[in-house]
Image (tube, rainbow, N blue to C red):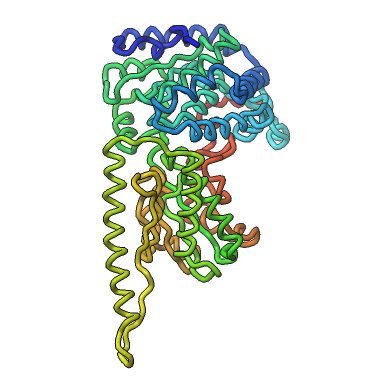
Length: 473
């Protein structure tokens, strides 16, 4: 299947992108939006998007097939990783889920169509209408396709024209999704544009900033600060910066049978998108009073990741990423060797000499002759960020509050905490985590599968995009 050159990103590699080209593209999609997108009813858009997602779940869909055939070379994700990740996204984009998203964030699924309101507002004699920006500039980061696709969906739901700026290695799948929308409804597809340019191109960014009413950014804190400093005062900035996540396993889940199941679920969270998203766990804290110790859980997790690698290979890494993993492994292996010597000396001490036997301070399990996966058990409970790409650290703790004390260095930066607890303990833990500042709590095994309506970084994704008009009757 060959793609027509509908978007700037479809042009041959090396084709120049100029500020005038960006400006003209923005003007064109705003004009198309006024004619074809703004008059559409929300339910029509929901059904259109849901049908596009349903087609992507069909193995024979040409856009899906091309994404799975060419995606590994562009993104670095293995085919199975891509397939699992995309299926997880598109299965969530149902008409029911999209309607619930609009109703959750805006109070009523009709809010973008007409003046309306819930009973509390009606009793006050008040109605309201929500309006999306005329043009949204969505700036995507990295190679994960799901955030870019969800940004496109959100912009369409609020009836905004959109310019999606992708990274050089992350444009293929968002571009294919955009083409699949055009394939269903060319007029609505003409209200979006996909472009690629190198970060730090101030002339191109200035041209896009001048036309956009709202700018969304997924990226590093440094990237967001740079954009904020250059954005015109007339444009709103919605920024999603650096976040990380971790898991917590309660002692009651550490029977010999349950611990293995939890380890398999945790391996799913670690392997999904090769641990590169903000929802990926960096550390798993384990209450060290269960039938299986934290160190024993690390060994079970290593077995689970080994099995996952056989079914879902991680894929090749850039040299610098592989080098970072090798360096971290070597550091922990040296610590493991030292702790083993200390342990052996304690065990073989002469009779009558008091020499306490220490726990193993560090243990390392890793894929042989590759950097495909690494599990480190570390008795030191302090939180340290992972070097990612299926590199996870298991740490012991007394309880959740203990784990949070040792994670204080990342407080305010934690997106998701995955829990393996009984139902009653999970409810109690959720209150503790919410008051500590965590914005999403879920069972371990579902950290990388948020519902489409989740409040990213604790904010309503659609609600942040719109402007309101109140009508007092």
